[in-house]
Image 1: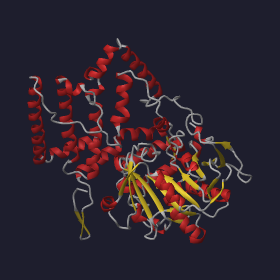
Image 2 (image 1 turned 60 degrees about the horizontal axis):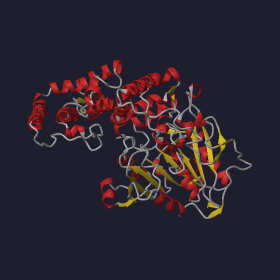
Image 3 (image 1 turned 180 degrees about the vertical axis):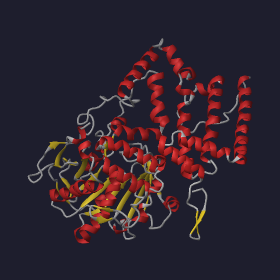
Length: 582
């Protein structure tokens, strides 16, 4: 971190913030905890204090502007000219051919892109600021620039004006109705709230709730084969969303795929907490959640061990549980034989774009908000994640709903995404501070959870770890570090799937294959670059490799377990009751 150094007790301390950052942080804590404007002002002041660097940046921008003027002249005279600045490959805002075919609109596009690209580069390279403050200022600059893109304004969006003429004004009328709908909902909707019905259209795999406490319902799915593997699979889902992302539709359902392959599957469906559960801690999620799910599955199937799966934050809990259980139960009574992680962080040093929201000021503001209600509302968290991809998740819907007057598409993943859940105050505050802010999970015995100090190096059970190439929530290179954190004795099979945090996991087999994955078994201290260079790339989905890996470890085929039994009678049909709570 850049800043002033000082001498204390004859030791040079270079960890101090610069006076500029210290002042900025003080103001930010008081009036702008998320740094929406103060981070930009801080970057602006830093550039003013470094005139030589500013001169070089301005010179680079002037070079672009000179090239752009030549481009404008050629287009004005009808001479073909290649774009000076091309949109990024994933930027769909200017995909309409009119932005290239029409000289006038091409010039509008090029001026916007020239300034945005240079300004973003400047803020990423701001001198005199720490890396984190540079990323934060660039993040908010990018969001401001995304907001003022010409595509977001009717008079600067040729596609919107063409549609207005083609529909005799009906598109703008529909857009106004869509705008009123979203004002009423207090949100820019991505999917209609009644587009799907959970239990009817989504989460339809048959099963029974066989256990319930104040935090979790445990669903056991009805077998679809006469024989199943003796060892059941217990899936710990994230509690920041509802469990049915792994059971969307019959074609996309991971749990149905597993049952069709002859596995007995249990899955957690977490309670949507209210004010009454404000004091629930991470300890409770471990003891009353994952520990109970493993216990019930063992007793239900009358087996000593299960295979444990954890997804996202559920995977972080599974990692904590594995360290906890190895210490609590010992090698002889360890109830998990092997385990799987889906897109899971255990080392939070570089948690991706969400890092812009992680510091004392931001967490303090969240804690203050949670203290008033006893929880963090799911819409607040969803809003933060939408800001990370504002073009795709905010302005895309602004344009299509309001300027083009289009109806919202009935997309099952988006419906799940907005079916948000709340976070208990005590648990979420602890998680943000101990994992994200202080990164204490990777420090041996630094955390004490549910009565045991946590040391990931105690985990010796074989691990199958799945990550996603375009994951901005759990970056795969950071997830890869689990290999270094678990015991050297633990065999690890590591997978990198194409796509992102959701579609890299919800990745059923299709023909021809839509996606691909890299796979290899990393050594304890092997760098991710070396692993990637030697990993085998395969077309299709990792689901098939995973079930083969599971088949070698989950025992012989036995008569299929019923969905419920006398000891664990059905409390409700799947998908249960907790998933329906709003």
